Image (tube, rainbow, N blue to C red; front, side, top):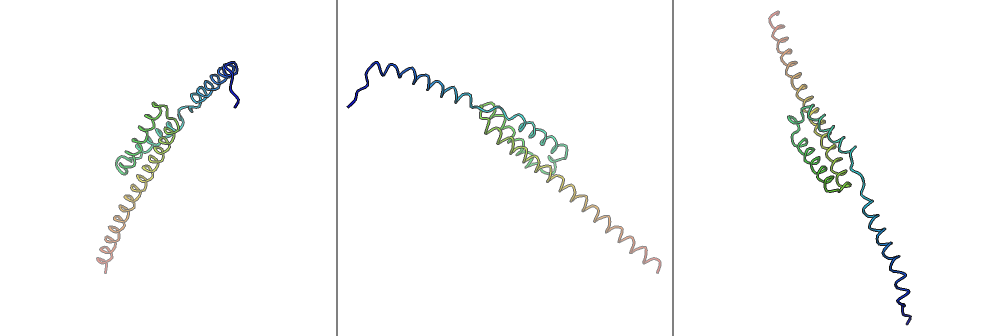
Length: 133
């Protein structure tokens, strides 16, 4: 069996220390930057949803968008940037869903009102045509 001499071991120790130091530095340097664009997109989508009355027509989706944005902010604080990006994207999607749902419900309400108005006009026309005969 071949034995490692003390001289041979001591020459390898600095190499091992440098290698492990570089690995540790590489791990620290690999933290991605905060997903600022994703967070800003989520905030803008939430603001647009709020302007579109999502709080009235889609409160669940809007609340979920706010919750996901809070989770994203927490993840940034904890330096979990990949998770922060994921939550920010989910927040934006929920806010966009809230906007779409609010728009659809408002359009349905307008449509229902138009149907009622048309029905009233038809009734008036029938009543008017009955008087002339």
